[in-house]
Image 1 (cartoon, rainbow over the protein chains, first blue to last red):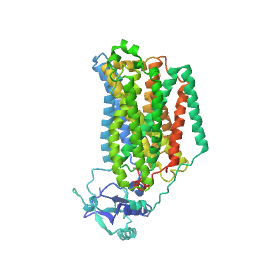
Image 2 (cartoon, rainbow over the protein chains, first blue to last red):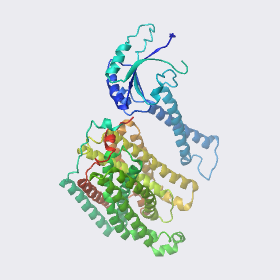
Image 3 (tube, helix red, strand yellow):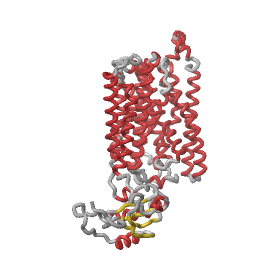
Image 4 (spheres, rainbow over the protein chains, first blue to last red):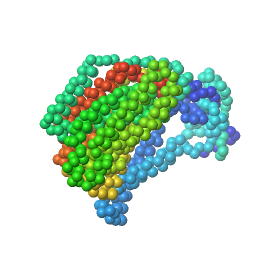
Length: 190
Length: 402
């Protein structure tokens, strides 16, 4: 793998004053020549995913698939256990008593769904990632757009990537960014 | 989102619902059909007439009361999402005064419906004898009247506060007053609605008792309320009144609530069933034995599948919850299921040999629908269909969903 020397350019950052101005600028960046960008906010801003043009999260499908797996497992396991493996007479009920299984079916669906949601979320967000700490104030009170250089061609990592930081900076300024500068990837493990 | 963003959009007041002679005529005809159906059955077959009356009475009572519960939650949580549809829900409470009338009429049918009102049977049955402290006609009448009067009072006060905003009253004092009222209403509602379900539905079989019965009835009625809210909102939107105020995000929210209470209904229904099944006490199992006999078993299964699984899977995908047509159809289905559910609680006591579906059954229900339609549409004709002075409205109209 190509090992970079020195600080790696993360992109050009532009700070915005409010969520509204960020949203407005994000919509313009989305439709601009800069296809690679990301937004950084201290809290979830409603409408940002739409402004960024992000596709809908795939996490619900993971949750659903695993929840129904949990349902199936609970039915099969309880049926096998109480009907054949460990048949016990409880309260004169038949061995195969669906009403008694339902609480476990419910719980196991939720357990599978919940755990799958956690790991699915981590997977689709590419967590844990350590290298994207551009400015500490982004977790506190500032909003920013980072225009990133296009990723290098995986077949030809040495090829020159077309990216002008000056152009990106002036573009962000034209959108109303209060402060723009180049940022480099840094992090706890970098 | 801040108000700065909302400021670039203006909110138009759609005004009142325009009175329509056709609508009034249809509702009036429904009332006439209901009255004829009920009175005809009353002379031929009083049991059918009164079971039909009780079902229709409780059907509309439960939905309009659930609307007051929704309003109370709205004030306590200062909810934002429902601001464009809160007046629609307030309209449903216009039906509540009529429940006083229908409750009084129901008292004349008490002897046909409730076995425990028969003194001869009471003395021969030690179980009923032991319950006479609670199950006696005068206490039943007092409880019913206290409940109805309390509902009328709270619904008037809560809706009156919201209507005074339209007349220019400042928001803060209205909010403070409504919030306090809402808290008191919760306590009243929990007690009065539970005992109404006990008195009017559970005591049809005086031997049976279930502490889950009140919450089971509530769960179903709250689900049916959201179905009604979805239907009326979509119809009003199609008629152009809520066009720029309600968008797919609000439909999504209402559907989410309908979905949540679909699950809650199944949860309470199953909890009631499983504990009775597990404990296996004769006075409790009688209720389900009756409903799982050869004539009613299919109805019971259809009810559980139809009221839980069908709306559950229909409302599970996000896209479905945002599709107006599909939500409308699902809501209609849920309202049919509310009818089936109440029928399942009432009819097996009287008709061991399976469900009845006479003209009186559907006719009486149509009559009540006509009354509800007249009262609720009159409310929309007198008041703005949107609470435009609600400070959360601009935020809500432009709110966004993930």
